[in-house]
Amino acid sequence: MKCPYCKSEDLKVIDSRDVNDGIRRRRQCLSCNSRFTTYERIQPSSLFVIKKDMRREEFNKEKLLSGMQKACGKRPLPIGAIEKLADDIEAELYNMGKSEIDSYKIGDMVMDGLRELDYIAYIRFASVYRDFSDITDLKQEVDTLINAGTVRKNKASGQLALLPDEPAEKTKQKAGK
Image 1 (cartoon, helix red, strand yellow):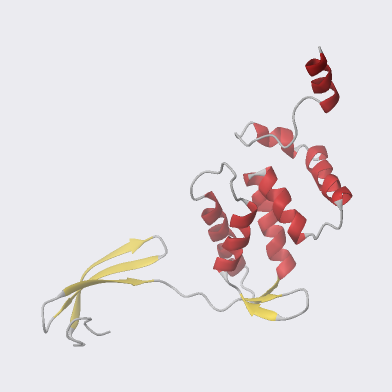
Image 2 (cartoon, rainbow, N blue to C red):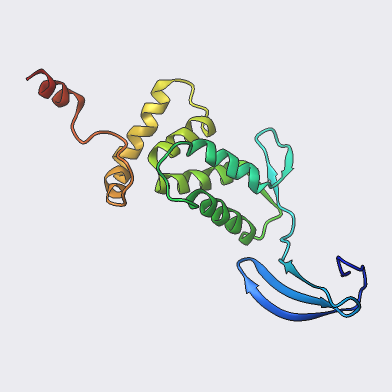
């Protein structure tokens, strides 16, 4: 390592602290006495994603995050929830210890996370990921959510309801009175 000011290699570490994903070190140059901070983090081994057409592409967390942000657009989610989900998925992928993983496994992990986070974001992501061909496929996915009891279970967590509690017919009857 070289001093960013004088390019000398004579440095000493003044202070080291653990930070979220690595180590923060405060350094001092022994030649010019300047101080600067460096951050060190472990770089995980490369992880490749096997796409549907069998191409291999290096895993890109930003691409994962971008897809989830599109699905969660304009949804009332807590700040940082999408980033935390992306971090959790990335950590789980690297913890698997594999050098290659199928894209559908990553998609399933995202779907599971979004199902817990927000129903609408889940349906948005599913409509692209599962490539719904028509409205009946979408309805079937919503029905699966309802039949699994996840809508009622998650309602207590503050998540917005996927469907109103009352059937549409009762709502129309009330409006007509």
